Image (cartoon, rainbow, N blue to C red; front, top):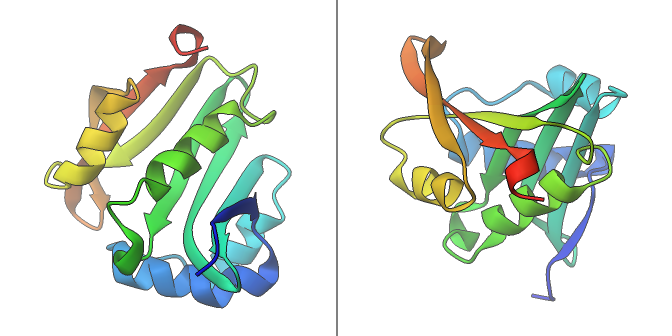
Length: 149
C-alpha cells in the first residue's frame, strides 16, 4: 500500500466508508444519512486513503462555537497504527474548527483503546448520555480547544 493521504471524503468513497462502519460501529449510518451529512455546510468529512483503499474516516460538525465528532472509524486491519490520531488531530486543526471553543465526542466505556487515544489528546469525561447507542450508555468527552492551541 502507498503512504496514507488525508483528503476530503467524496460520495464515491461511501461504499468503503460504510463497510468500515459496519465492521466498527454498533449502529452504522444508512447511505441516506451519509449523503445528507456530506452535503451539510456545517460538516467536514475526511478519509485516510492508501491508494484506492480507504483506511479510516472522520466526520465533525460545527455548531456555533463547538465541534462535535460525529464519527471516527479505522478499518480493523489498519488499527493500532496511529490513523485515528491523525484523523482526529487533522479535524481539530482544520479551518472549520479554528475558532471553536470545545470539541465533543461520545465513547463507550468499554472501548479502552479509544478512551486512551482521546485522553492522550486532552479529552476529559464531562457527562453520560443514557441509552445513546440503542440502550447502551456512553460517556461524553470534552476537549477545551483553547488549551490545546
